[in-house]
Image (cartoon, rainbow, N blue to C red; front, side, top):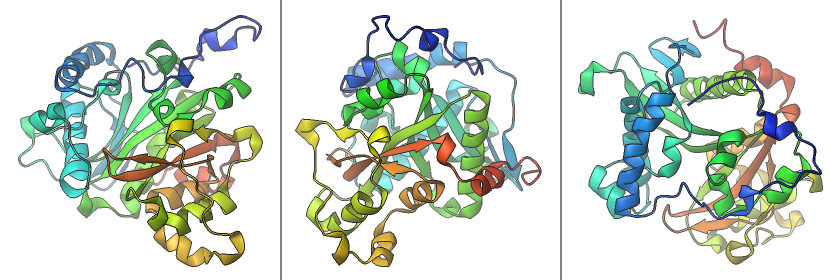
Length: 322
């Protein structure tokens, strides 16, 4: 994957020029639902590796933990194995035949994304080639690459075409497939992941982060309190709003604002969603039930411009992560 900090010239063209809009498609070209397409996705990592030559650059380190981008296809496979363990073995996701066969969470997007890794240099035992263990990961997809390869993953659940069109002068970055190994689910690991994201958006001049964030469970009635809280307290203003696809739309406004206990609602929210809210993220209109992963998803929209300065300074860990 290229990591050039230059904006894609195609994004700077005159708005009157007719352009294709891949962001209204439902997980088009890259999606890999079946065994054959999953195996093709594995092969795509070889092409990814050929494009991924870059100087090894650590984005931050605290003790034995380091955050950086994956450099090789083997490191991406480590991330896929971690995702499989967290999503399918610990969680309630149901693997398709390709993922079950490979024991890895893989789809076609892996071959076009950058993969942010947290590695533990003190946990090498048992890893192939004595590599550091991958204990945390995030998948990052820049807009220029999404345009060239059929659109964002998020477009399979939310109609983000209007959102991107309203902000055609800005560069979007999709965050996805976030997970951390259970013993490492602590403040230090999360800080390293967010430091890596901060460094990435700075290097690549990204302006807006988007992605699907998940609440456990596929019965919205049981999630009425957290969904309603997000609707009333964090719903995106019109400028930044996008809706769930009509055929997948799940109403979030299930309890009146007056009847909500905010403390209890926050307690029920996943840590990742609460972390996004602390940074200033907005929530889209409507949720989507993802039966494959056993979750109910909401849309996260986080313009870099709204992140509070104290968090920008906090995630600038250059002097703290040594």
